[in-house]
Each structure stands twice: as C-alpha cells, then as structure tokens.
Length: 420
Image 1 (cartoon, one colour):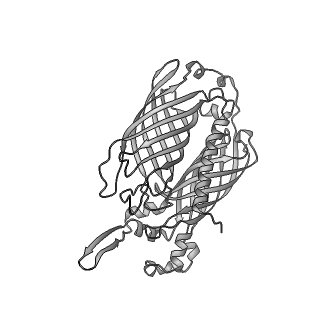
Image 2 (tube, one colour):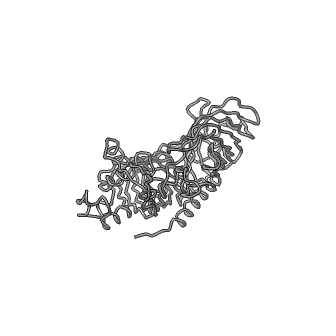
Image 3 (cartoon, helix red, strand yellow):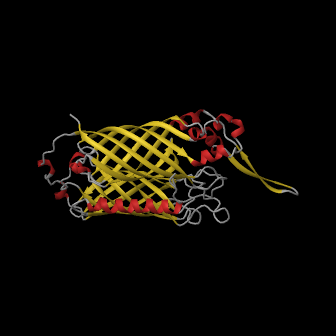
C-alpha cells in the first residue's frame, strides 16, 4: 500500500498547481495583458446559527496571453483562446469567522462563437487565514483546513474595446473546499458580478490573421491509458483523521486534432476508512453483517466513467463523469453523514451530545450512483508532438454527485496511435 502524510500530500498539490501555472505561461509565446477585476456578490451560508454576513468581495489580477500567434494546433482548434494565471484576494462577508483567502489559479477563456462573450474556467489552490476551530471558530463549518481547492467559472461580456483597455462585465461562481480531507467541510460557494479591464489590450493583434493562414490536417488517434492514484479523505466528524484512498483506472478512447480527448474507463477505488470500520466492527456493522463477508470488496467502489479533456500541449484540463456499479459501504457513509448532532443539558449531569442518523432516502440512490472527477494534468512530453508513449502527473478532486469525496494525486501512462 502507498502511504503519504497529509502535509506531504498538500505540498504535492501546491507544487503541482505552481508548476502548472508556470508551465502554462512558459508554453505561450506572448504574455501581453494583465486583467484587473473586482467582483461583488454573496456567499451562501447553510449551517444553523451563523451570524449575518455582508457582501462577498474579491480582487483578481490575471496575467495572461492571447493565443492568436501561437503555432500549436490546440490554439487554432480552440479558436485562439486566452490562457493565464490569476492571483486573487477574497473576503466572504464576515472577517472574524470566514476570514479571507489568497488563491492562485491557472485558467483558460474560450470565445463563444463570434460574439463578445467569453467563458472563463479556472482551477487551482487557495490559502485561508481562518478555519474551523472547536474553541475559537465554531461557526465556520465551511472551511476546516487552510489549504483548499479553488474553482471559478465566469461568463464575461466585452463592453468597450479600446487601444489600451478592454472593459468587461461578468457573472459567475466561485468555490473553495478542502476535498473532503477534514470535517466540517461544507465549502464556500459565492455568486457574484464583476467589472474588469484588460490592460495593455491590443485589438490589432487580436485580428492578426496568422493562424487563419495555417493548414492543420484533421487527425484522430486511438489511445489506451492507465493510472494509479493516491487519495486522502476523512470519514466522519468523529473519525476525522485522514486515511488513504487507492485508485486504479484504465481507459480508452480517441484524441481528435491533438486537442480534444474523449474516452470511457473503468475504475477501482479502495477506501481505507471503510475497510477499518468493517474490520473493527464499528457501531453500524451489526445492522449490515453482509459487509464483513468480503471486507476489501465492500470497502471499494467499482464503476465506469465518461472522460473529456482539453489538451493544451503539456497541460490537460480533465472532467470525468462516473457511475458506481458497486459501492456497498456507502450506505453507512450516507446514514452517518446525512444525520446531525445536537447537545442537551441536564441538571446534575451537564451537557450531553447526541447524534441522529440519516435515512436511505431517494437522494441516497443518486448519490451512491454518480461520481465526478475534475482537475489538472501535466504531460512530460507535449501532446503537440503526438507521442506514442507519454506520462503525466495529475491533481484532481473527486466527488459524489457534486459533494467532495476525496483529493487525489495520480501518475498515469498514455499509449496513442493514429486511427484510420
């Protein structure tokens, strides 16, 4: 079994995001704009008893490149997108409890057809100065670790394109969570509007016909890929230590024009928390004695998935939609974590904590079935070279129907050949 400490794992994730940021800039030929952006909106609060919060505010500085003079095929196929790295400072409406965050996020912005609209996607890491503390910050059930994943999607509209500035407005969604590595972890979800300006904007270069004169031959490759991953998650508020999740996956599919990667795969995930709970005969095992027959299998998830990826030479931006064929132990996970706790005081006794278990309702069936995975990959050999053999490292967050399941670092291999 692979063993890795949480501190080392967080360091690996931070290193990967930093390297991805540097490499995303390094592989581009021109870093010719900086975007200054201000956003204002509201952060959703769900836990009971949380004080009123003010407006969510964030300041983004994006260091980016136009890809209209990039000779790589992916830039042509994606219609000359913008890529870059954003640094953000954000407040969430209650400094004493939620504090503020500083994030670093590699990003890509795709132009939507011939319109003035652009879709901005960013994924990276955020550091928080405030986190949950049982004695000093009890209300912050949103953030329990200082290092967290950070994800952002925005829809921008170009209002006024002038020689030195491109003024824009936008609306979007901003999310942070620790990937289920410690409870409580409701995560922060902020919805906001923004105004921004691309400084050093040069419209004449946007219209540069360089790539229009290039000739790229359509291509299709068949690929087979295998990866081995190590994840980390917490199980419950009571069993709040981090234990590994071991992941093995094999997939196959097609790479179109060296840019669009589509495939289907099979996966196996082994949860150490589940396995230990079964072997130790914890509280709910007597209600589900069948789980003790094959602990390893019953502590695992086995399923199939559909995979999509943008390949940007050395960088891959991947999304996966999976379906669990088997995940027997999840019924106990759901019963425990869909319940709630409360405290009662009794004369002569003092405070007594109670835990109310959840039920296997209709939502359980969907949550047990659907798994998702999203993250970044770094390819050792740039995909523009169309290599037969390639190796990558990846950092992903895995979820059950949108709720974080575990964080993952992986090492993968890809075999690719032309498909005629």
